[in-house]
Image (cartoon, rainbow, N blue to C red; front, side, top):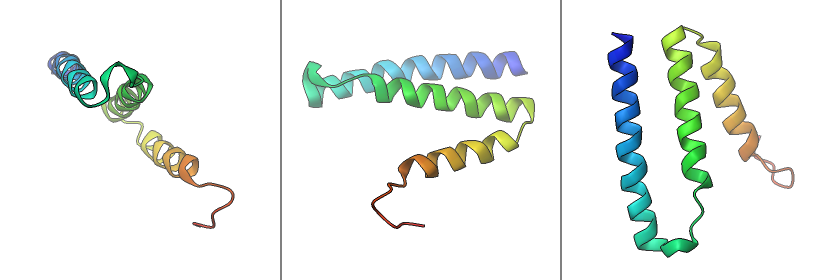
Length: 78
């Protein structure tokens, strides 16, 4: 079952990568950077690995890191 899930994940990532790359090129031209796209792929891989292996504390870590990186020091959002 995990092999099917991994195969499904890889195929869906490839489809969405090329689809969003075409959309990005249409709206931004070639000036758009591909870094945010790869950040999303790496984040999803981390989440899937945490879910498949049963390490649910990784989800808490991921959420804390996402919130922590969005808080700026000059703004009081806490």
